Image 1 (spheres, rainbow, N blue to C red):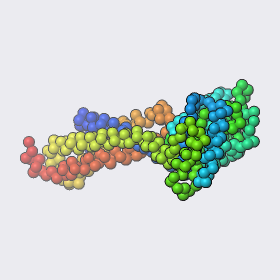
Image 2 (cartoon, rainbow, N blue to C red):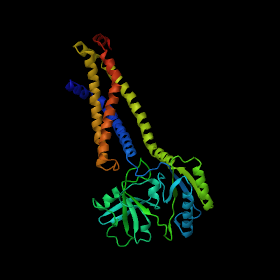
Image 3 (tube, rainbow, N blue to C red):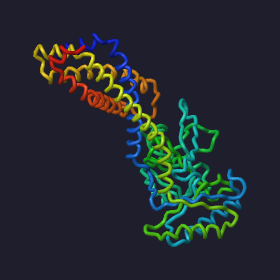
Image 4 (cartoon, helix red, strand yellow):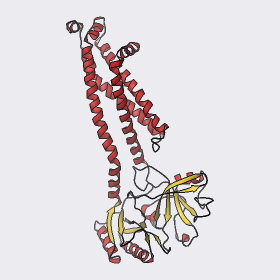
Length: 397
């Protein structure tokens, strides 16, 4: 039976070529959408490395330049922190150079011998760990013992620790060993991970600087993070902003819960996936309609052939299996062609952020979807072919 189906497909190779090409294109579209969808799903399931619930982000708007703060602005920040922490519902407050889910990123790279370390950075106050409940897996968090140190204390994630030190402990070591020209970046602690901008971002190297409260000048902080006690009344946010405005009348403040900021950030990152799904769905529906029409016409043109097979003893089920078998062969050819193209993406590092295992999973899902689509499209034409009788074939013109 298989040999017979392959021979029938080969004898109609010119007519079937476009169907194979159409299925190959459909396979590539399904592969791209499946890979993007699995990537987002996997990212969503991974831990963020911090707790965003019951935390509010208050954007700081000081007058003048936001690049660097002098003693006056630093004193204002200290008063702002005192005012925020004086609210009974506030557990803790801290300034950060860029708040979580803000899409504000600061990437840096440093030469470390024969390689270059690349990482995202953020500058935070000492209370940052308490506000976002960030777990330390090795070493410690910033504290007063870092005041006046001749080095920059930093906390890094495990990914950066592995890149810089391999399996050795990074605590107490200079991140850029052998660098005598720059101030030492001494690792004081290690965290598991910190995906600042949300679940739908890829994990990468991360380094956290300490904002020294005693430095004569400091980089401007973008936000104030405030952790509220569970069950705090709704007017707490307005009271916090009023307290801050009272100590910094010429500053502007805009508050928003991190839960809302997170939802907005995720919607922005899901937009390309939703658009791709919409385009892919439209394309697949058009392919399905076209494929059904072609198969219908194919069955009509082969009435004599099918009637002759019925006259020689083939059952209706045999005819239906033949039509679906031919369609499965065409789908397999399209999958092979599309798969040969799709497999080049990881080989050429065109999807470097997507793990190879996820690419293989996307290939498997695309194969299942395309087979399901082709068999669904061939269901009615094959059933129609199985109803053809020898008598109909004799009367067919």
